[in-house]
Amino acid sequence: MRNKERIDTFTWEFAEIWKRSFPDLRFGQLCMNFFGWLQSKKEKDPFFPEEPDMIEYFREYANESSLWYRKN
Image 1 (cartoon, rainbow, N blue to C red):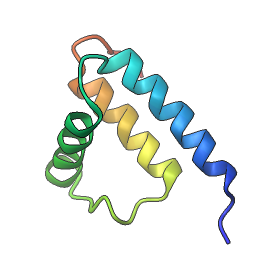
Image 2 (cartoon, one colour):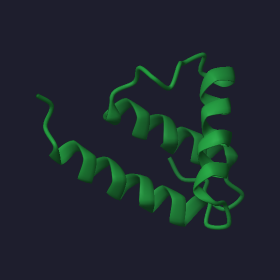
Image 3 (cartoon, rainbow, N blue to C red):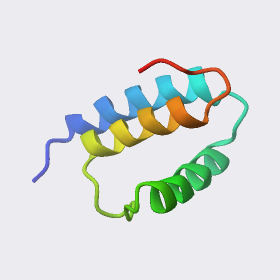
Image 4 (cartoon, rainbow, N blue to C red):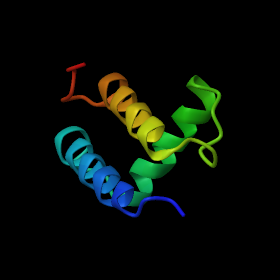
């Protein structure tokens, strides 16, 4: 069984990215935009990445797509 603590780690980091970089987007808007970017730019199916990989993709997406966030 996977470590359940990974969920808290992921959701905390995701919330920080969402608040800092995309505060005006609703959850569905953010997810759809991100998944489209993930498939088209990274050529990744969102079904397969593990949480640490997915949060790195979210960071990259925020750096590339947010009007406010430009930090690596």
